[in-house]
Image (cartoon, rainbow over the protein chains, first blue to last red):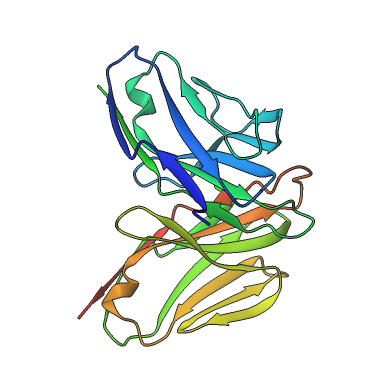
Length: 114
Length: 112
């Protein structure tokens, strides 16, 4: 299993541009998450999904959108990028809480908006 | 005030020392997690526990539910243990998903 994969690893955007961060997991996990990590801060939840077709906002959803058309994929869309969105983004997945709460993380995407 | 607080924020040790990182939380939880983030950025789950103690190699994690406190211990520390250690909890209020609330992390540096 590849686990959780993310692309790209690095990206530089200009203010106002848009992009999609890709996340794929091959563990048949129902639950998927997007976090951002700012220097010196704990990870913050942006959006999460409990299954295909179901998404919900986390703590810091403004400026982002997500979709979950398949169990495997959970892309994060940035519209009109702003410098405040400069961060490291992590995708994660987990089994249903009925069996396990452990989350598996992707390698991260380092995004700079200038 | 954060729901999850870690101490210390930074810790420097000499190789071979016994290390303790502390985590306090202020909400009822279903589980507590210890994660390790390497200098390259990747995050790996070390432990998930809801009571008692777990051990994996030189790492030991304990939790006291009544005191809302957990500790991560590293015995015989080694420079390769240098990383950020993150405490996170699954609040009991979560009814969907297994959303985590994270501490800010402890930067550990082990010198040879």
